[in-house]
Length: 476
Image (cartoon, rainbow, N blue to C red; front, side):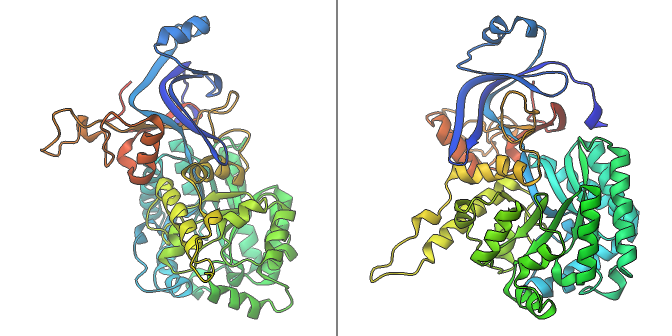
């Protein structure tokens, strides 16, 4: 399997870019990254013009494999902190519905069908491949309530070598009778079975880890949430769930948990609000709720595309960041319409501008410019921010010595001097949708990729130094 394939010392030669802080995107026009047999970055060199420059400084790497990119750059792998693997076939299907209607109309019937493991394998295999093709090296997956199908998703991620958190979804109410846990005992038993299986097939959790997954508060009774909190604590497992995504959902929580001060307090009272908790959406939080989330060390997955598609609202990400809350990005397929975190980064920028434009106007309308996210900040959320959300900030997220090499090769191609009137778009269409004319600065090339690139630009993907995805555009 890809996760355990032996690798040799490799020097990745060419331009590279990564975020070194929230607002600081470092771009090296010509560098080298040395990765050892364990997939660890051993050196990072800048201002390199040839392989000999590297081996002169690092003679023990003279026989290392060279992987180079001349028409693009290396970038850290993307981290998707929230998505629903079984919903992949429904991508783009939400009609005019909002969250709760959408669940009943599209989501529950499809997820219930995963009792058929052949169907589950077909969909899961395709979705993992699709996320990898978009440069996603780590993904937090919701599965279904089915133990066998959830374990199958674990196997597929391990086989493909994609880092993953895989969670069996728990629901003991607000779902059709044909698709819910029969009782709390079975919900805990089946969740524990999936946790045990993940730790059996990946004992050290180097690739796949289990995650306790109450769908969201309205779909779980208070006793069920409390037992899931106990399970997460006993197993030392991560927790993933939804919070304050939609105003109708928030009202439902008030009605069904009248003794709780807020939606956030519902989770806190069940011991589900911990340093290992991923809260998706978080659009309609009060200041007190944000304070509690920060105090507990829980993290937030920002899903702007889904929030727009389901008309849930615009998350005020700048406020979350300013208050010290850790934030990453999530595609939230199939509420979101693409498995691409690059697309999500664009949507995060657009959403922040919607927030800026919706600021209360004075006599003369003014923009709340502080709310706007920069390109660098969006890319930070897609990489280092996401790494912190899933508890891997010490291992991945950037090209630092000692980190594991999770990366993607981005190829941009170039427009020939004579022009391209036939629409061939370079070598096998290597430039994808990004047209590079040769007079762009390294910073401008990255910007053009962020705002108009897609999976056609992603030529190859590595996890822990192992090649887990490649296209015809990947050339060593």
